[in-house]
Amino acid sequence: MEAQHKRYAIGEVSHITGVSVHALRWFEREGLIPIEIPRTPGGQRVFDEDIVYWITLCTSLRDTGMPIVGIKQFADLVAAGPGNEAARLALLEAHEKAVREKIASLEESLSTIITKSATYRAHVEEGTARGVWDPVALRAQG
Amino acid sequence: MEAQHKRYAIGEVSHITGVSVHALRWFEREGLIPIEIPRTPGGQRVFDEDIVYWITLCTSLRDTGMPIVGIKQFADLVAAGPGNEAARLALLEAHEKAVREKIASLEESLSTIITKSATYRAHVEEGTARGVWDPVALRAQG
DNA sequence: CTAGGAGCTAGAGTCAACTCAAGGTCAAGC
DNA sequence: GCTTGACCTTGAGTTGACTCTAGCTCCTAG
Image (cartoon, rainbow over all chains, first blue to last red; front, side, top):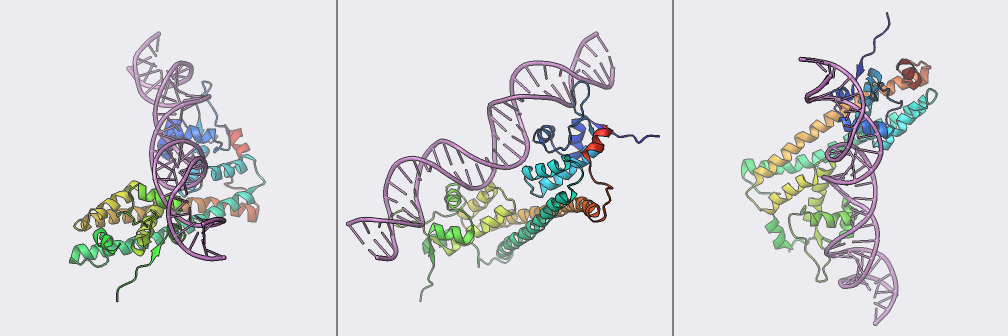
């Protein structure tokens, strides 16, 4: 009893991963997929679960702000075969750090925005105008 | 005793806000600044603390992913003068929600990445290979 | 066996958000 | 009053990441 590996056409993979068909082909052209995607005799791509998982991982990297060249570096390490796992780990850990920093920075920017909207909320709910930006007043100052 | 308002040249504003001089001029051209920036008789821009604060707020919005057109909408409301504070508040609150969702989504993607790097860490530290991607094995499957 | 939706390639086009270039002008210190 | 670094405008160029086009071929359901 051999393990059956499910195969997917590009449209299915697009549906599963949320990556457009065009983008999937472009990912391959750019070297983001560490193996050559197998083809049918007619030339159509055949994806398996491992490639789909890889693409999912790529989208996590991409969605967290890793540039395509960064993903390509990772793909190149994987394509080079076993032996460089420490380098792959270093790359992922560096990115993890970058993502945590990005989240922290988003939270900081968010608090600036919250401060401002609190001012507006006070104005709208209570009718006060303190701290609310008024371009006319500003022009008068200038 | 009148309040003194500090004035800044564009280079200082760039230094304070981290926005390049080119970008500051471009912000103005795109209508992101709700007032006309005052000029010296010679035509050079003179920024005051309110404009600097506005630019800071803009960068918080931009850094949290608000597109320039969104910031322009906000600037247009402010430029229209008092009376539309509820609309400004709605815009900010919608963006706050979007940022919180973005943070949540980043955290989800981060956990996918952490799962993968944990696999590599186990491999690197313990010498196991379970779950580690190997393009040769994949090719053999194909 | 055929219709038509899904796939194929190579290369051009798009979009946001700057960034730079050319060819000047302004202003603060010596 | 001159030098020099900062500033000015308009418009073109860049970058990253797709997205679309043209003109095909494939393949599966009826």
